[in-house]
Image (cartoon, rainbow, N blue to C red; front, side, top):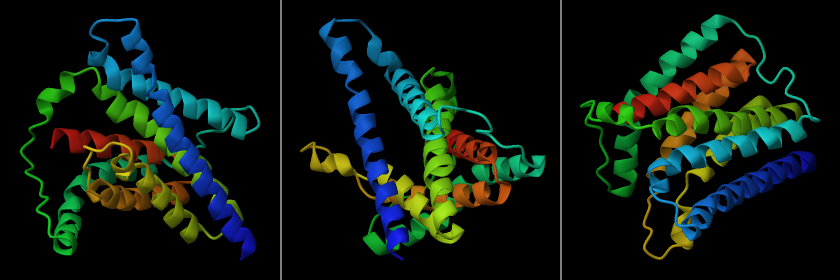
Length: 225
């Protein structure tokens, strides 16, 4: 039991360092501003996503004894199809989740399903949201956090705890740092369930590839709808 708690605390600490690292990486925009570069903000999300993902690859490289060998294990192609289907479907499954959230917290979140985000697909920053960020987050939360816990605890606890850490990344922690920042726990709530699905896909397929596909099409569908 003590070893289990130690491993959970360690992965929680690494996640907190990951979050701090993301915020520190975001400081690049302040440096650019000091040089008075024009229009850099038009590519902010793309650059930020690229830097975050690069940092994750560097971390994974050293965490795996300086190798990328077998980073994405081979698996049955059916898991990619399942991941693709669940990635698209999860946005629609969010409606009942939102009903529960609204009931618990007295909010009025809902989804229009009007495909209003189609026009935004032409924005180059979308590469960050639907490709770079999903790759980086899945490598960290599934390939590192969940995989590490699966080897030291049971898989159910590993999936749940990795999902909690994934949700923590999307929590409104900036409310504590920025006075006028008033984000809710809504996104945290949804990402926890998304993390459970991704974690289950990773566990069953034994490869990070399907989990990345799930995350990519989850984000893409959410942006379109």
